[in-house]
Image (cartoon, rainbow, N blue to C red; front, side, top):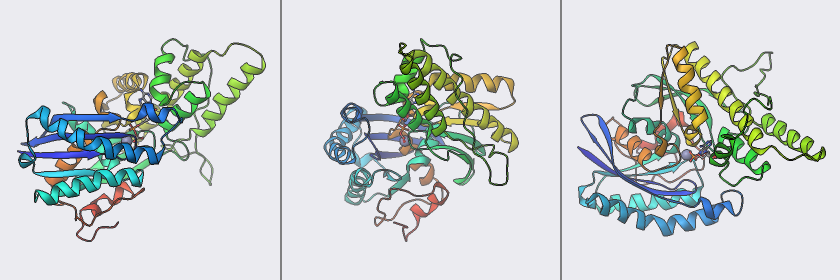
Amino acid sequence: MSIILSLETSCDESAAALVSREKGKIDLIGSEIASQIEEHANWGGVVPEIASRRHLENLPFLIEEVFAKSKLQLKDIDAVAATVTPGLTGSLLIGSITARTLASLHHIPFLGIHHLEGHLSSIYLSENHPKPPFLVLLVSGGHTELIKVDIHHKYYRLGRSHDDAAGEAFDKVARLLGLPYPGGPAIQKIAKFGDPKKFLFPKGRVSKPEGGFYPYDFSFSGLKTAVFRQIEKIRLEKQELPIADIAASFEYVVAKVLVERSFRCALDHGLNSLVLVGGVAANLRLREMMLEKASENSIKIALAPMEFCTDNAAMIGAAALLRLSSNYVQSSMELGVSARWPLEKTDLLYDSNPPF
Ligand code: KG4
Ligand code: ZN
C-alpha cells in the first residue's frame, strides 16, 4: 500500500489530505480544508496577497490535523505532493515549498501536480469510475474544457471556452443579481424558487473563420451581457427584479449547453463514458440534466463526488498516486511553480530537467 500526503494551495482554499492506493484502488484516509471564501467575498473575488498569507498561516495546522485524525505520522508516508500549476504563484509556492521541505527532511519523493490533473483525478475517489479512454467535462472557476483522457496520462483537449469559464459566468451573473461570491452556490440556492424557462438566454456559440461553428467550444460572455441587458430593461421599467427567475433561466441555459456539447463530443469521438468534474460539477441542475441525457443515450455518466468538486487536496493525492504507480515516479526538487502550464505537457513535471 502507498500513502501520500497531498497539499492544495493554488487559489482560495488551503487543503491537506492523506490518500492511499492498494491493489489499484484509491481511498481517502483524511481531508482537511480551510476556505478563505468569506474573507475574499468582502472584495467580490480572490485577492492574491491575502490568499498567500492565509495559506502560510493555515497549512501547518491542516497538516497536523489530518495526521492527528488519521492516527498516522510522517514516517508512514511514501511521498508528498503539492499543486504546482496553474494558479496564483504566491499561493502555489506555499504548498510547493512545504511539500519539498517535508519530502527532503523525510527522504521521500516529491510530486508536483497539475491542478487540472487533480480535478480529473477526483473521479477516482468515486466508487464507480470508468477506465480510460473517457471524455471529461471539466468546469471550474478558471476552466471549461472537454478533455479526452487516454491511458498513460495522455490528454487531448477537444473543446474549450473562448472567453469566460462556466464558474466565472456564475460568479459574474451572481454579482449582477446582487448575490454573494462565490456565485455558483448562491445562484443554485435561489434558482430553486425560479422558473428556468422564464427568460430565453442565448447559448453562445463560437464561429469558425471559414463559416459554421466549433461544435464542442463554449462562449459565456454573450450570455452574461444578455443577463445584464435583461436586468437593465426590468430596472428601466421600474419593475421588481425577478432574481429567482433570472438565476434559474441562467443556470438552465448554462447546464443545457454544457450537456448538449459534451454528449455531442463524446458521441462524435466514439467515447461511451463521460465524466463531470470541477467546482461547477457540484451544481445539482447540471448533475441532474447530465444523468437525464445519459438515460437517452448509450453513454455512461460518472459524476465527481460532491465534496471533491470544488478545490481540495484529496484529488491532488489521487493524481499523485496514479503518477507514483506509473513510470514517471517523482519530480525534481528543483521544480518550481507556474501560473500557467498546458495539461498536455504534464509529463514534463516529472522530468529531471524541470520546465519551471
Ligand atoms: O474548482 P473550483 O473550486 O476552483 C477552480 O479551480 O476554479 O471552482 C470554483 C467555481 C466558482 O466559480 C464557483 O462559483 C463554482 O465553481 N461553483 C458552482 C457551484 N459550486 C461552486 N457553480 C455552480 N453551481 C454550484 N453549486
Ligand atoms: Zn480548481
